[in-house]
Image 1 (cartoon, one colour):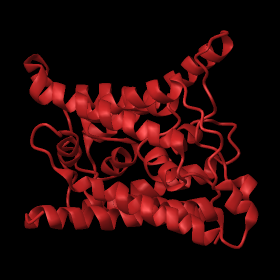
Image 2 (cartoon, rainbow over the protein chains, first blue to last red; image 1 turned 120 degrees about the horizontal axis):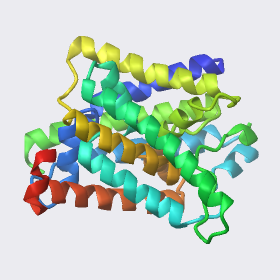
Image 3 (cartoon, chains in turn purple, brown; image 1 turned 45 degrees about the horizontal axis):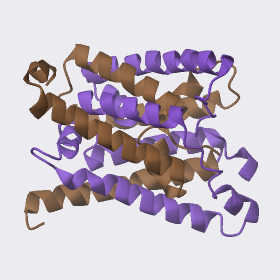
Image 4 (cartoon, helix red, strand yellow; image 1 turned 60 degrees about the vertical axis):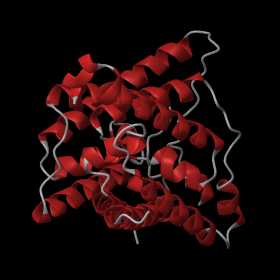
Amino acid sequence: MNRTLAALLSGLLFGVGLVVSGMTDPANVMGFLDVTGNFRPALAGVMGGAVLVHALGLRLGSSRSPVARASLTPRKAEIDGALVLGAAVFGVGWGLGGYCPGPGIVSMGQGSASATVFVLASLVGIFGANVFQRGVTASPSSFRVVSTSTNSAAEAK
Amino acid sequence: MADPTLISSFSRALAGGALIGAAATIYWFRAGRVAGVSGVLAGALQPDDADRSTRVWFLVGLLVAGIAAAGISGAAPGPALPVAAVSGLLVGFGARLGGGCTSGHGVCGLGRFSLRSLVAVLTFMATGALTVWAVRHGAPSLGALR
């Protein structure tokens, strides 16, 4: 399977998973986050199912390659200001709208104007963070920004 | 857990999650990348990125899944447009700064037992829950955002 086809198929499967799971309905997401009110805990199953299958898949898939197996060991955990501040800001946005990036794109495909605005705004937010990170990296500061987890698996190949 | 509605929505969540986990595994082994949607979006925006087309095809897959789903049922109602805009800005900025979102940290990172990702997931779950609390129960003046 070539990479283009693999990327298309995994995007498709990922999107179907988001629809089936109920993640594309902001009311579900906000219900999941509404722990003190009308709490709807079902979405815990999404992360549970996904992490279980992914963790098993990674281990089975790399069982014959020591290099691939080594790449599964997380690098030194760098828990810094950027990670915590970024995740905190992300959570506020997630709680406000009920969309995160994947469900936003899928809902955009379903024709939601709200999701389309969300996705376009998130591109602006990504661009803003790139600019912010360059500014922070350029100035000497203890507020370190490490490279993101969008690392490649190329070294594992 | 005797509530049949909860059991049915939990089963769907679990099944959908399994598909997401399988998709992330295929993307890792066959496309050589972490299937974090915010990271994929960020990479797709960079013209000099060598793997740009791989990322774009993943995004096309997500969109096509949405278009196909629209044939069965329309999109669920989303937030008002100004709320969607503010929420998108925060989500994009935060995911980029924090190195991932619900998929990158929540699925791929936790699947690799990354401590960084665990910290990120606990943080965004907490601020997400606080935000929903503030909008729904905490501050009546924020009710307009609902």
